Amino acid sequence: MAQISCTLSYAPRACPNCGVINRGQILKCGFYQAKHKYGQFRAQPLMLIVNTQRFQCPDCHTTFNATNYLFEHQRTISRDLKREII
Image (cartoon, rainbow, N blue to C red):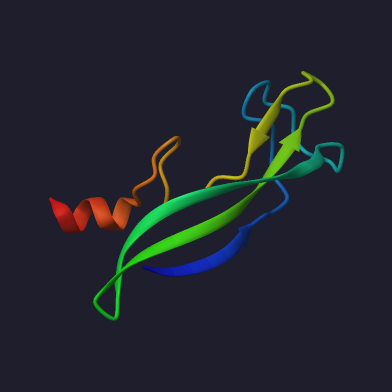
């Protein structure tokens, strides 16, 4: 199985939980590692190992993760691979 490691991090616009606009007060709060199946590469299954940024909102004291259109929340299969299968 082929593996690619990457990092997903950015400055969020707002807290998805309470809606407070980020003016530099939302804190980066470490990373977590997620593994996603992502089709094939040179006839081998491809696994993306994504280090995803975790954030903390000082207003509502909740944490949330960086998101990406490639991956659905709490799924280990990418949207592209799901389309290939269907």
